[in-house]
Amino acid sequence: MDLTFKKESMIKNHLLARGIESKLIIDAFMSVDRHLFVKEEDIIFAYDDFPLDIGFNQTISQPFIVALMLEYLNINKNDKVLEIGTGSGYQTAILSLLAKEVYTAEINLNLSIQAKKKLDKMGYTNIKFKHGNGYEGYIEYAPYSKIIVSCASSKIPEELIAQLDKAGKMIIPIGNSFSQYLYLITRFKDQFKTKRLDAVRFVPMVE
Image (cartoon, rainbow, N blue to C red; front, side, top):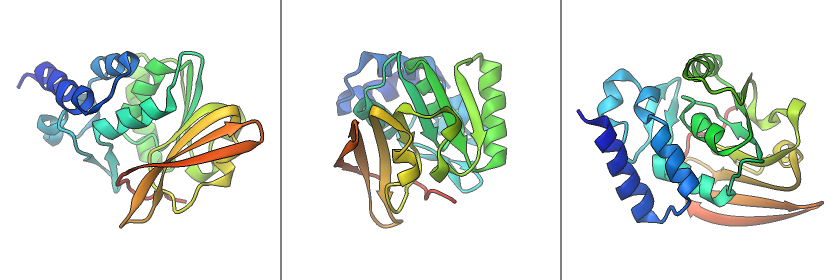
């Protein structure tokens, strides 16, 4: 099984062909091996464009949706990013290549430990991990220039909004098990602009 070919095919057919334009994002996807973040029995599916089960009622997100969310956020090398939902650590690894610093929170202790162990072993050094409630964010290191939420909330959490810096952006799926949309929240000092984007399907955010 030629995983390099499958990864290149994923990027060509599911990212570039569907409108992902950022070279930085494409390069980050090329640099991170998704097959290292899935179950052994799912490696054959690692570069298909759909979520995969990672245990504990959680999934590794669809590659296109990860890329789409990152493109909406327009992360740069000066950004301090908060990720809610570490999960497998795949998106965390991509974020670490795009941003200056990544702070990631995961409510499931097992997933948090596994992701930290894996990413530390891979040599990622600009990531701080937290086991805790995603609704509370990671207030110790706030504010953040960008926040990305990888699980669906029924509403926009005020605690996370409060952790955005004065010109920050947050992307989050909002909805229930039947209907969800991505929302992009942009802060201008003490004003907030909210824009509804694409329909999506994420696992629910857990308190």
